Amino acid sequence: MDKINILVLGNGGREHAFCWKLAKSQLTNQLFIAPGNGGTEDLAINLDIGVNDFESIKKAVLLNQIKLVVVGPEDPLVNGLHDFFLSDQALKDIPVIGPKKMGARLEGSKEFAKMFMQRHEIPTAQYGSFTAENIVQGYAFLDQMKSPYVLKADGLAAGKGVLIIDDLKQAKTELTKMLLDQKFGVASSKVVIEEFLTGIEISCFVLTDGEAHLTFPTAKDYKRIGEGDKGLNTGGMGAISPVPFMDDQFNKKIQDRIVKPTIKGLLEDNIPYLGFLFIGLIKVGEEPYVIEYNVRMGDPETQVVLPRIKNDFVELLLATAEGRLSQIEIEIDDLSVTTVVAVSGGYPQEYQKGKKITGLEKVKGSIVFHAGTTLKEGKIVTNGGRVLAVTSYGEGHESALKQSYGQIEKINFEGINFRKDIGFDL
Ligand code: AMP
Ligand code: GLY
Image (cartoon, rainbow, N blue to C red; front, side, top):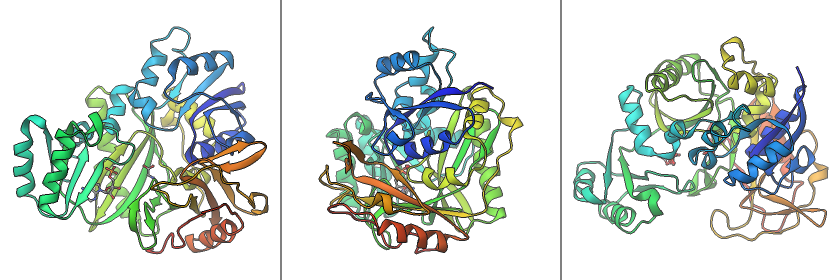
């Protein structure tokens, strides 16, 4: 098969990991990324184009003879990037990895996802859905729920649209702010109120061509800023794969009760779906429940999941685009992989950018995936909240973590912060 030019969309650690894995493929000619970051420059040509600038993406795809587009974040998918390609004469035969607008609603609308799960009997928390018109019923719904109260903006809210509140009165105040004062803009013109589930969260990843699917390694993400899982939510401070407490029986439950019914449900509902599906699960007792669907890979989970996949990534993605996934078997490395994320001081609240990063060249035996970095006058400087992730292999998660921590110590920038306790709960 001929080597091809590939375009990745996004600028995070996830997309750097995509580039790292794509660059290993025999089928890759030249990699491009839009917009990319300071680390992707080593593997790909960074294009100064935003992920939602469809017209500029089109120009770049045609100019650079791109033959495969891999979408990192959800926004361009929810905004219809795949549909845009299919409706354009010049682009329609260029495969896009990521669902069309209709499938992307699994992430783009919490209510849509809940209705989908209900229709297909996929285990998830009980819920009610409310708008400004029936806010009074929303208050009544809260009255008959138990604390803590889970309030979710229906639409995309940059990962901030979920509130978990102990106090009933405060929950009602927040519901009012979301529905009447547009706390999260149009994203909260509808609010899903959910039963609170207690358990351990797990990230499950699937690649599907709409009929067949491959299950990627599962991962555990550490979302809170502080040690012991305390403090504010972040995009993710570290991850490990595999998840030690997941046995065959539990994995089978996930397949039988969640993954297979989801793929079948999409088919039954006539929602063509091609690409990654990230199912956020919670293990309640011995039972898996769906917390959310995402129509993309996770970040920082990708930085531990892709290093464990032995298959040629381009081959996997082309098979997905061409509906040949049933012919492919996934090969997974038995080693554990961990990643520890270094963030800017102050993140997830206000932080500064432009801090010079030192020590990167001293890292040995680990992979540094860049996220919020950029190249300024030939030097790598910070450019975001989550700055980079140090990924390592090991015989078990303890040894992989020891390696990640040994290497992250060599990296420095003003205000650097990272959690010292990734994997503490295992
Ligand atoms: P989401 O954006 O839906 O992933 O929600 C953000 C976070 O809120 C999740 O990662 C969970 O930690 C938490 N969460 C969401 N829904 C629930 C629920 N029904 N019960 C308990 N925790 C939840
Ligand atoms: N790490 C969680 C996410 O990517 O949404």
